[in-house]
Image (cartoon, rainbow, N blue to C red):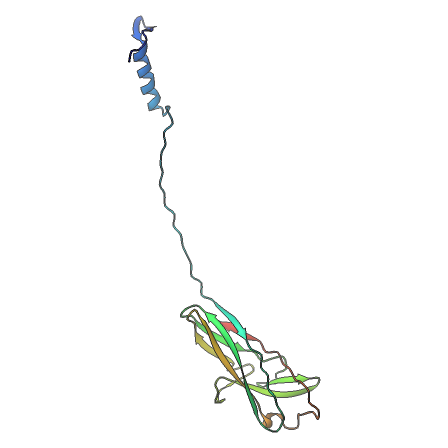
Length: 178
């Protein structure tokens, strides 16, 4: 390749155009001026996952008892909860809207019938309305069902029965804590 023979006068000396061009390109490179070039830059990011412990109540079954006032009657209800693996949790059975002391009551108008919840089928450990009203468990990440055993006892309700068939109700809150 041949360069043109142009001359530039500088300080009384003659330089060839090609030499001047090479010097200009070298100077431009030192200043960062030049043809665009592709570059890569790498960096890293840190991702953090915080595992929070949690429990949810999946289902609560309503309780129905057919009571005739002549014999004690029992029934069951169930509470299904899902808690994080290894998480200790406590199910609290509320007093209900009509409790009297430690005894829960259903109501119809101004008439009440007493009923009780128990932790086990043998009905020896009562879940009081405000004390001893919890059931403990440990989560494994799957839904676990806890059974509540209920009893309506003649001895608790003597003289409390109306003369006609009717329905009594109560609303009991179920809570889970961990």
